[in-house]
Image (cartoon, rainbow, N blue to C red; front, top):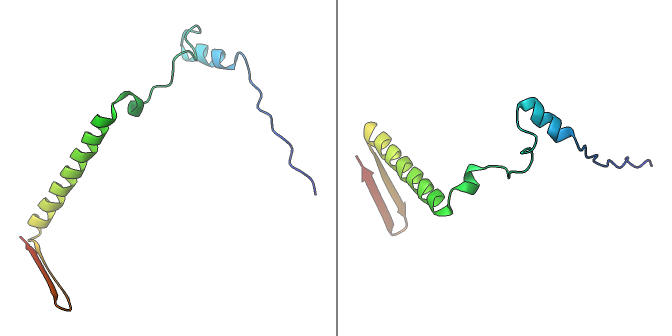
Length: 88
């Protein structure tokens, strides 16, 4: 059985600089700054507050849709357990 060839990555010293020059980036700054990401620049507390706000807005949107279409009624009976819920 033949084995697959081993692929070794080849690093080009000028590859990044040539790409930076063609993009109009000064070569002295190419590759020296860390990659920018929105999630790494915003504190976790703000992300948590953002997602809580999104969840609240989704609940309000669902309530608006239920109200618009006239509400609903739910009756659930299992043995002696009776659950009734009505929303208009």
